[in-house]
Amino acid sequence: MISWLKDPVTSFVIAGTAIFLLSGMFSNSEISRVIELSDADVERLSGNWRMQRRREPSNEEMRDIVERYVQDEVYFRESQRLGLDVNDAIIRRRLVQKLTFLTEDIASIQPLDEAALQEFFEQNSEEYRVPERLSFTHRYFSTARRKNAEADARAALDSDIKGDPFMLQNSYTDRTLSQIRGFLGDEFAEALDALESDEAWQGPIKSAYGWHTVKVHKVTDSFIPELAAIADRVAADAAVAVRSNASETYYQELKGRYEIIYPDSMTAAK
Image 1 (cartoon, helix red, strand yellow):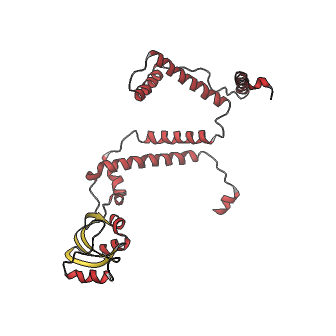
Image 2 (tube, one colour):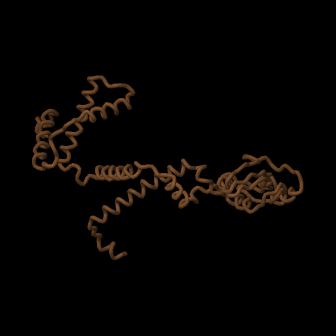
Image 3 (cartoon, helix red, strand yellow):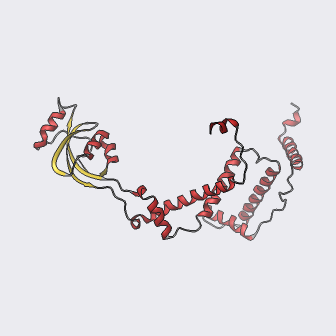
């Protein structure tokens, strides 16, 4: 390689000249070369600084902030003139994301009124159902410690035998079947769910650990709470739904303005 090309200053000048020439060749007349900052722009830049640094910028810092903004704007416009935004997957994703956010933000400016919240709640009430909960005590009979743990557990139904030490709790209060499955396994949870509330010992039922006798102290049926009790949660969910629906509606409206031609392989599969 020619030695003068190895000089970083020379290389920079050559690269800059090439970019300038390309910019002229691919110049887009619709992209203005006038960068005008308003007082609102300066205040926005200053506000961003204050949020990050938690103090007012000095005059010198403010000049640097503005100059960095100008530099970004110049680079942004020049990259557009060069067509650097075309067929760039990262830029494509960011632009799609920004348009989606804009659509959703516009849709969520107006908060939902009580009637709309009530309607959303009624349409999605099952999503807020509180599952059945059980409170019970159990005695554990270990298959590792006993020759016939099931038989011993059955014999203990009519006695006060304490059973074997258990690594988890001996009593559980207001636990869902999902939680019980996590503690003691599917087989135990399904068998427990089939039992009635009774202060007598019942079973034996099998778990992931061995055999158990149980006292089911209370079964709290599944129910859907009143809207007033979960209003904040419903409002948050409804806002998310509004944003999502707005994005889909906007997309379908825009899609209708385009002619979309799919490959033959796709149209044949329909």
